[in-house]
Image 1 (spheres, rainbow, N blue to C red):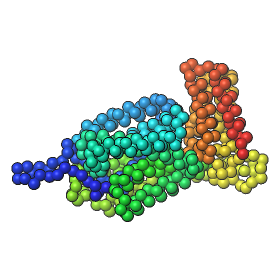
Image 2: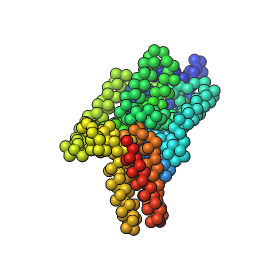
Image 3: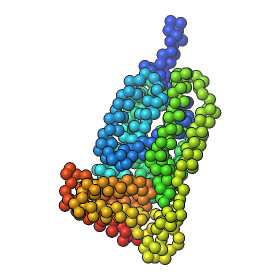
Image 4: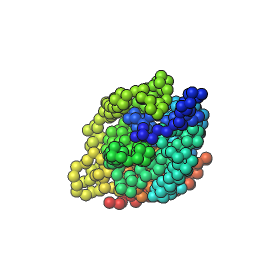
Length: 432
């Protein structure tokens, strides 16, 4: 979208100096092509699912995961800034890590500090505006095809980090405030990106179009990731976070390897040069990557079993009220709580409470990991149904996790936290 805003230093026409006078190094951002946008969307999903996998499934916890990701980002960013040319694998590794940390920043403000999504979205938007303002005043260009000095690159990565934080906050705000859910979110954010593309074709400023689209790819990638990872019971494909991340990672590696080979063969494209790879070939690669994802998801997605279908809660049994038969999504049929069927979580909590009461705190701590994994897996589908109720139960679960994972855990504190958690579940189940 930004080919018309490429900026490099002028060439000298004198016979004394015919060297091309560019800035200290060539542009260090990949060409904005179809494969660029596909890798960006896939990187967004990888960033979110991988962080959740480390924190929940692996059991590192939020604090350790956040610290590790920030450390890795610093290392990758320093390497990226020290490089004198575009290195596609290093660039995209940095983007993935920025995606993770940008998401973690928003989650820290929202979940830990309790900052409203309205406030965080507004603050990140103001920060991004400030970055662009200073960038423009210093460089007189915001074109990402002119990231050819150290200072411009620092502005660029500052803007990239802010767009991920803003995209996370704005996407969560839209999902929660409007109760979009991941399926509607994928359609809406995808449609907005297409609208930006159409506006660009109609004359919208290329730089503005790029950055709007860049922000929107964050919630789009998250919605697509949730669509693939969520259980079929919640309306997803049911691949799970690990398999989805693996599929996306394979496609990213193949596309980035192609970019790396092209850069090694042809170098970085400068203004006025013909592209080393035609747009038609680029579209073909992007289409092949998208088709590969769809094919893998179709082949690997679990099929719903009759037993699973029969076990889904229905409106006429879950609350003793007459209703219709169960649908694919229990959130549409279950009337025991505003966020869906809580009975699977209640079973785990009761089991944990029984073990804790018997003094088996080690076994209780191990068992509550099942609750943490199940709760995290259902977040994308349950949270939009009633954000306030979801946050109330999420907070109660966090308190129980904290009590059981204390060093050493207190039997009294664990009992208190688990009773509070059981009470919260009971209160939500009484809501209609």
